Length: 348
Image (tube, rainbow, N blue to C red; front, side):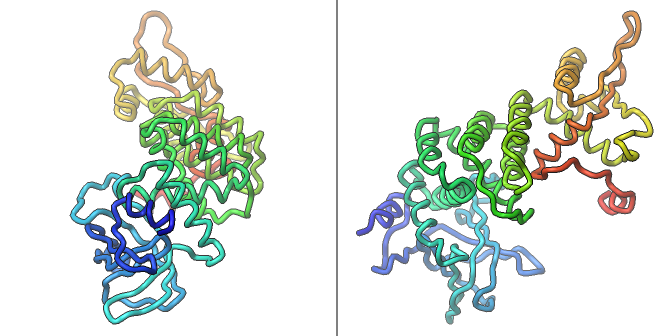
């Protein structure tokens, strides 16, 4: 029995056939038909492919976005599911066979990533196994020279932090796929810094920002030293800082600016709005967060009223650097553009 097949057995997939095809008890898959998100059962699954019991038929070669999860699970927690791109390779009387590897030449890379995932992360369920495999395959692809260092890093951190690495990598992979960047290798040092910082927070919004930073670093026009500046800046922000910066940049984009980054007016926000955004009820804590963002050069300064008057509104006008950081956290390499009015009306 191969090492990979043995690891698959440990992950909860019992072998049934000599060709490495495995039954998938308790798994189901969903995909978009164009009209609805359809759930179907899995006949069997292997390290590189899956057979779905479905009446739908795709043309061989067609690529389908699959979401795999444990049967009967209603929780939308992303850790309980995994999205995989699959290519149709054969049609059967009771369904279709697909491969997870779009390029046959990468089959060995995918299998190696799965073996590493099963061994390193002790993945004891198919969903965890495929999530970890997809994450590792992405990290190895964007920084081939860092494979050994990535495995060492994940092996030395806690299980919880390893799960955070997987989540950041998966979100970054989706952003990178959507941007369709030119092929570029990230330096191992930069990649490991992003993974180190990104693995330290369990906050979903913060993890999304680290995923965005990682995805933006995959863009060909993005030098490592420029990305490193944003990595260092994001490491100085917590979830409340990120919430305020996101609100500030979104409002700035809605308001728009003239050439030369000139706003028609200063963007103000009352304390109730900021409190709703951050969940912070203490005005002193809100002001402390705003001052922190200003000192980092991300927001304009809020001027306190004279005397002992209470602060009733704050300045959340972002600086150009604040907008650049926001863009990186969204997976882009350039400062966002002001939203056009028709787009705003459509979004609303």
